[in-house]
Length: 314
Image (tube, rainbow, N blue to C red):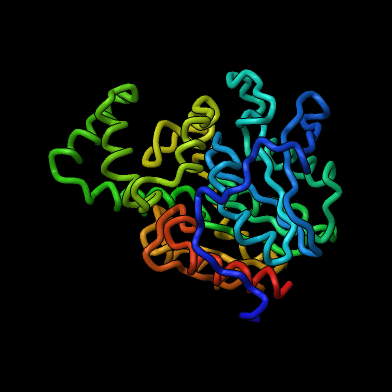
């Protein structure tokens, strides 16, 4: 298998520009009321639909996938979820749009619009929630070949336990300030963002310094209205519609092949990701050493050494 797989270090300067029009399709969603942006890159028998995280982020931080999936014979599809980056941006106060069930309908509308059959979903972070829910709802229809759950555990509570441990690594004075801001819901306090962006996220979100340009670009384009409605104001307090999400008791019902990819320093407990695979009948787990939440950037070689053979096995 090794001779079929290209593993290489990413050169940011060699990334394909996302502005080119080839392969772009706009897919109607919400019964045709809005359109979302998609882009096909490469061609091959195995088709991979990428579901980005957030909620409210976009495809841009996935750009390193271009260096690995198409060169190894896989057809990949970028997709900006509704409200994100290139897609239509409705009023974020329309709360009917920002629910797991509505997003799940959107993923199916995108699958139908792209004509994807016998395809693979790779969902990262929040996209991993969608991958799990999509498999549970649609796996028996014959379209879904496999799922890859990247850097997402099986419940929001499990996620908060691990992210809370990361918060405890702050110096006592910074931890006290962080918890005071959270208790007072003083989300606009600049010290809170400083703690997140300078002291915590470089340890648990992406450990490359400086952060890769596609990731920082994705951060600049985040739709915070959606993030707040769905998640909350940080990775440590979930107050939005994701609160209470739990799939632990349903994992046994996912019958399609599955790969759980975690990382040593992720905000998602790698032990929990191994446990997820053990609870699913056709799943395996892989943990990327030295990596964090963006393991396809900061533990890139290990990430694709696990992902590519899995895709080739389908």
